[in-house]
Every structure is written in structure tokens, then in C-alpha cells.
Image 1 (cartoon, rainbow, N blue to C red):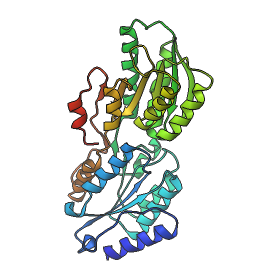
Image 2 (image 1 turned 90 degrees about the vertical axis):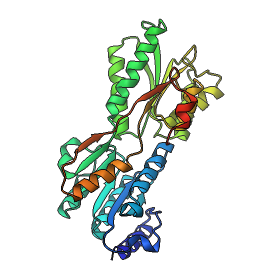
Image 3 (image 1 turned 30 degrees about the horizontal axis):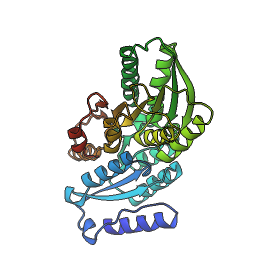
Image 4 (image 1 turned 60 degrees about the horizontal axis):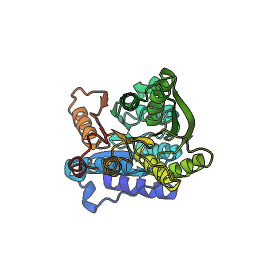
Length: 331
């Protein structure tokens, strides 16, 4: 029966213009012992997102007792809502999704609750007032990530004897309204209010992609190159911004050049950190699949769970990064 449901779901997604790409071998739905999970991923906009998807697929595999129905929403909230509604119609056991933005989920989550299907939110939050409509959240404390970044920057500037000098900051934001953007932006804006010599000269959206950040940074450099700090909200944006700055003749280095701050700490981001081009890379751990697996197993056994689970994270800067750290990264 579940094999039939999965086939119907995939066909329906294709007809309606969705992007369900996960293929299930004939044996994947044999028997009713497999736990059926519908997973709506927001997209594949970055190395981080790809690693997050692979972690979910690995943890929620047939070998681990699951049948995973995967949908790539291609950065469209409407696609996510459509996929979740189809998961509900097909009667999956659990729904997992990474919301594009925090708002606009009330109706679909009410539908899941009425169908008695537990919902696990990963990576990004939804509006706090609707916390009773989902079962658990697994992800990062994005405001804390931002606090780590601005505290590090203040200390660096002080150690360089620039604690009172004017600091001109370019801020390239992630997808507006996403939890990562909200938290990381709030921390920077708060820090600027606390440091009178810090000035936000430009704040633009890079949408968490290298291409968009390259375009945005290129436009900024057309009218000013007087930049001290570029605060990018993920590694893709940092790489795009760095490429644009280097083409314009700017040096990206905390010692006499532009200080670039980034988030995610992917292997490629850390390569740039080792080269000194990214001064600080705050970790955002995408390997959330095992945490989801653990929560589902506890729910099935009637065991208590942590409703809000923040994943342990750290940071890397050009002082402490090593080749060994990079080579040992899982993403």
C-alpha cells in the first residue's frame, strides 16, 4: 500500500509542477513496517543545503527503517505548502520540512494536526505563536550565531587598535524572512547601535547564493570601495562577495584588507578562511538527519523528547583554522 502511495505522490507532484526527485527501488516499500516520512526541503541553493538534504536522506533510509518521500521546493513556499498537503493526503507517518520563511504556515499545519500527523520543523523556525502546531524543532540558534560574529569582530578591532575608528560595514543578507536571516541580521543591527563608530553603509539581500551576492557586491563597488567589513549571512554569499571585491582590486584579509565574516563553515568556506580571505566563519551544522531519526524513534516508543533542540556549533577564524580541521569536515 505504501509503495502505491509513494508512486501516486510522485506522479501527482510531477503533474502539478513540483520537484520530487527521490527515487525508490521496488523493495523500498515492502511491508508495512517502514516508517513513511514526507520531507519538503526548501531548495538546493548552497553547499550547506545540499549537505542538509544528504544527511536527511542518509538517516531516513530504508536500511534505517524508513521510506522517505522527498520534495525539493525550489525556494518557493507555495511548493512547500503543496507538498505538505499531498503528504497529508497520502497519509504519511511523519512530516519534516525546512521552512523558507517564518510566516504563512498556520493553515497547512492545522491540516496536519487535524490529520494527527506529527510535524518536525528543521533548520528554520516558524512564527512562535504557532509552536503548538508542530511536534519538534531541530536546528541552530541563529541569533546566537550572530552574537558570536559581532563579539568576535569587536574584539578583533580592539586588538588591532581600531576600537574607536570608523568602521564601514556592508551587510549582505540571506533570504528575507528566513530564520537565519532574521537572527543574524538582528545581532548585527544591535551591535551597530552599541558601537557608535560602526556604520552600516549598505544592506542588501544576497538570497544565500553566490551568484546574487556577486551581483550585489559588484553594484556596491561601482559607487564605493571604502569598505572595512563585509558581513555575509552564509558561505555562498561570502564567496560571491569576495570574487567581486577581488575583481575590483580589493584585498580580502583581516590584516590591512576587508574583513569578511561568514556563516555555515562548509569545507569550501573554511578553505577561504585558511587563505585568510574569510576572517571568521561561524558554524551552522547541516547534519540534522540523525537528530530527526532520534526524535521519530522516541515518538514511536512514547518516550519524551526535547521539543526545541539546538545543535552544538562552534566557529573558525583565520587564527585557529588548520588543514586537518578542513580535511576532517563532513560537509
